Length: 63
Image 1 (cartoon, rainbow, N blue to C red):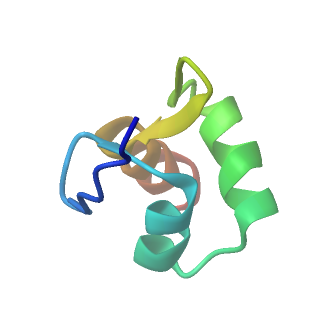
Image 2: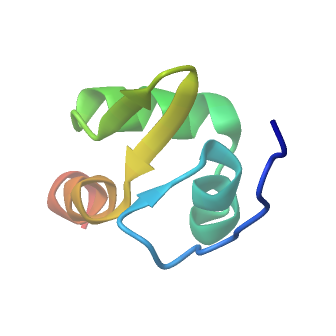
């Protein structure tokens, strides 16, 4: 199966690396905060973060 490379950093579900780049945080911190915010979505083996939920949580807790 060919892997399709599509990068949409403004989508609802983003990868860990995309969220790290968007927030300028490390991967461990993003994983911890995403779990606290209940923003993690596992689709098969794919780890995705709901961008809106994650950023709203950061604003609520640290804003």
